[in-house]
Length: 121
View 1: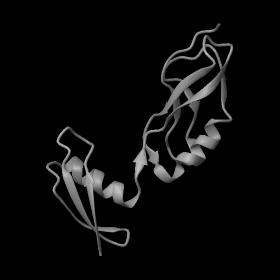
View 2: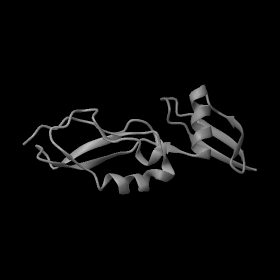
View 3: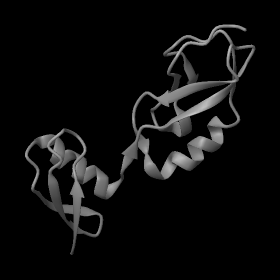
């Protein structure tokens, strides 16, 4: 059995959470002051996830790149593969904030969306 100590980032409390693991199985979680801390610690120890923010190329826009973000977290171990997909993407202006740029990236269930609008040049 192993023990991991994390600092929860789900709320301003910043609880020191201890997780007892048996391989990839969570045995117990302690130190959290809310249920979000328990959920965060379990997920972080078994298969962490992150929101991905980056940019894509824009053709005919007022800027050369467009900021994009995943609409939900994707597994951390997929980030580099997702970036390989995204770096091949180019969009044409105009683009609206929230517009889907890549749907269901790597079958993760998350879409990459524009995080701002972009007008034509």
